[in-house]
Amino acid sequence: MYDPGMALTWIKDKDLKKGVINTKYLVGNDYEIAMITKRLKKTVNELTSCGLKLITTLGEEGVKYEYKSKIINPKSQINPKFEIIKVPAYKVKKVVDPTGAGDAWRGGFIAGIVSGKSVIDSLKLGNVMASFAIEEYGTVNHKPTIKEINKRMKKLDTVPLSGRHLRFLNLRRFK
Image (tube, rainbow, N blue to C red):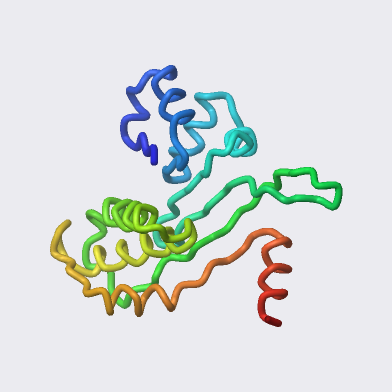
């Protein structure tokens, strides 16, 4: 995972490019992603075409996940298709302190990936961990149990932003 964050204001373009081409997951908020694409002179589509998975954090709206999926057509050719999935944030009753939410999200996402969860479930885990962080004052006072984490995980659903995902979900319901 590469998340240049605040370093974008001082990191050299060559170092930014090195970080981007050597990662599987590029993470940033919408402003940071726009800055990265502008500085590298690449569109999101161009970045994902080389296998990069782009994750845009959207604060209280959750995260957006953009990537190229590989679809095998009838002639056995692999055609990459640009996909966008939105994973909504877990809505809390009261935000006490947003400090540390981004760190909690990144920790949850990385923990999910390292433990073998799918990217989508890892994104959900990141959102859930961020939700616990904003309910407490300070950056390390949230200590959810596995049961509490799983309860919130079950309440989150993804929102496919392309027709292919909707068709796939509908097909799966019949099995």
